[in-house]
Image 1: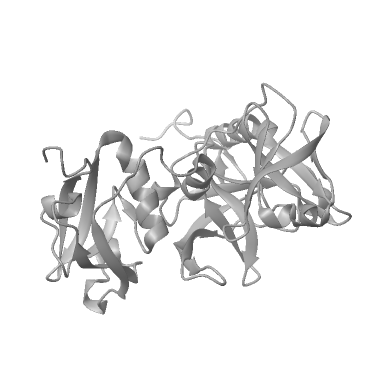
Image 2: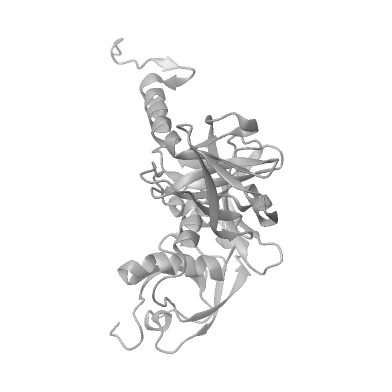
Length: 312
């Protein structure tokens, strides 16, 4: 039996309680989304990445600064600060800025390596100069694209959130209010592309303080069509193991030449960058869970990332 106390009110097709929770979540994140100006026409969004004044945005938002244009960061509370470029990566389309401010509301950052197609996401930004606009959608695809003038690839999140000029550099957030991407461009006229937050986080953090390695030589290979089902349905490629370092972590874990490396700790690996990034995150616990394709079947192997002089 259904009573009126069991029926949740609906607002615009969304249960009222869920709608209120989303509104509260957006309100928590908005103070950490800034506006970035560079040059006469450069305007975009940015994210308070560090409470001591570290602002993350797209490189193309501040590209005019390469020609001497000043950068100005406008906070949601109305304060404005000149900014300087701490670091930039045109290939990843990322830039880290610094402003002379303290105790800023840094945004919570989620683990985008665990993001799944179909998850609900939101974008916050300043399209066409309109401040604090929010749009919603779902994750449409996850993948990697070639980096121009390089043999590397860059990971991306594609979604159907609506973006416009001024959204670039702003956050893509999940339903819990965690940043899972940095909005970068519009693809095909209707789909939006974001840089995964774990990629941005690895770049901001820089290389690990100590060498991390697996002890393999790999090359990119296309996965056989017969294996593209289940958890591999959306995967097109993996890393073929073509060489092993004697007594290295992979050799000690019984990885074999001819294996195709798919994931490290649930992070897909498609090139040297994604391989090193995944290993860097696993290094904190000294272990890495490898998922690989061997003889047409998927296997999981635990590898000890310690050096060969240490016991396996």
